[in-house]
Length: 237
Length: 221
Image 1 (cartoon, helix red, strand yellow):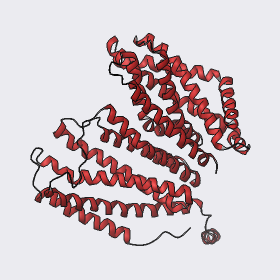
Image 2: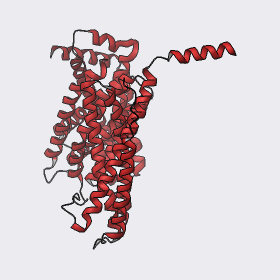
Image 3: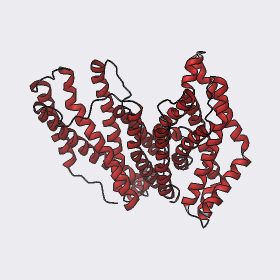
Image 4: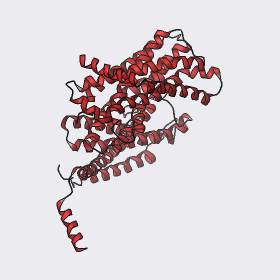
């Protein structure tokens, strides 16, 4: 297994993403005009919508990692799977929280059983359950294969969940994209989307490095120089 | 195909020999149906309206017991390793077990219907349609359930992990089965039964296919 990379790129990505988020949020909060009907409450869109795109992207990437692991059996895909799935769950949780903060003054309730909201909540539990499964399996190979299988099954389930909940009930407005919102809102939305993208890809790279270090300590035999040092320490004691 | 039938025969025989377990799981399901009525109160109209939801929740809770049990037997004395050494594909083992689990759950569902009728006054005359909905719904539960039980039976904390993995996944089954059963009990003036039954069937097809594709990777390593 290759040694964990010491590249600084992930840290630079996180820093660049954080800077972009500051610019985009300042633009969205202070410079962009307020929305006609919702007023300042609408400004949460500048983080909410980019979070939604990026949560989907992170979970899709974890699905790609799962398939790649099953085909290649390369540990790097397992490390990435763990990192991307954690990031997807965190972003989805953030998404639900931001949505609730927006919904209370707008719809009058914290939660509504609308398809996108419900699907996101189901996704949090489905992928969170896979993270729990990873925590309870000690054999690295079984952990990697099982979580890849579970990830594929859960990802394939997402469209069915969305479709069934949409039949069941509907209220959420149509998705916002730069095409559906006024031009004045474009730039902060785009800047924040790339800000969050850079932050999570950087964090995923760092987290995958941690996972690969843990994996090395799990499957590697004890290093001989440690044993020699221990023996010397024991003799001198 | 012959391998599937042989695996199915083995699993049905195991279930028959352990039929005391089946009776206990039925008692568990009936007890949950009794408990749900305490959450609502003695309002017979509300109970009747929610009867379908209670039936499927009871069945879902009971299913985690029977699905977990079906693989715990295989982990005893490394029976699963022995099965994998046989000249039969892991896929045949999966389909045999999934069909046996589906049969057991469908039987359990049919047995819980009279309990629901008595407790909630929620009867229907469309018994064939009801049996069809129960069969489709339990098929949707048992395909991912069998796949996940194969993993969780070999882990620590298996009692928690199986429901944790299975419940979010089967939300569409729960939704569609409750709706379809409700329509059968409360009447279906708009003819909405067919789309909900199709959703159940679509879910079952997707997950039976996925389970067959992925099961070999879960047990062979």
